[in-house]
Image (cartoon, rainbow, N blue to C red):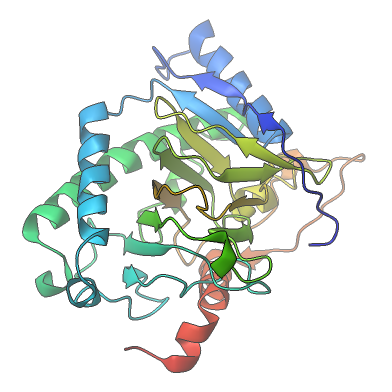
Length: 321
């Protein structure tokens, strides 16, 4: 990470307003397609408003998250994460390295993969109400994610269903994150709330509370602070979208600073990753004389599993609890 520079500027990610977004042929949708295309090309992140999420539903998910993370360890361990393959359950504080070269991340998480279809034993959920709420929110996020995929397809002059057909939900995950307040004197050198990383799949939706900490790396290698804004959903492009588009849409390095100012931070991420058997081949429309093909063909499932396993280095060595 030596090429990255510390920089304290506050950066505004490009804003995309989805108000009145209908997939007709009107100028309104053309504007949105153009704005999404520019944001992901220039920054890799965009602040999206009016996607149609209910504020009340989002607040219920944040509340359920806070309640779960404030419960005792015995309760949390009932929902313990068992394998990267299943990608479901609770991971304790400092058990994940999003940057495998750095100390463990100062956060705890609850991950839920493909929960509209996966068979998870009821006793591994915190409660029936928790399960029902998370499935409802997952479905809402999935609906918006598939709509965005049609926007992306249009921006890339592809058939509208190009990305949708690779995203049944098999590798799509909802994740609750809690970054507890910590004392700076207890930090290891270069330890972060979430280590510097790119996301693995197509796109990620991020819902934040009012406590900041997210930083993204700009094109110059400088870390830029992103001011938290509860009124927008941050959406970023991941590694597989970057590969599909031959680097046109950036998979931007980002991290979360430790919570050393006395406040806990909560966030909710929705990772939109392609089905395992998807072969990621650079789109012909993204190759030309000035932009030769930069990426080899890869299998989505193998790529995502490799990334998950690398982030859980200690967990993999120890095996399931």
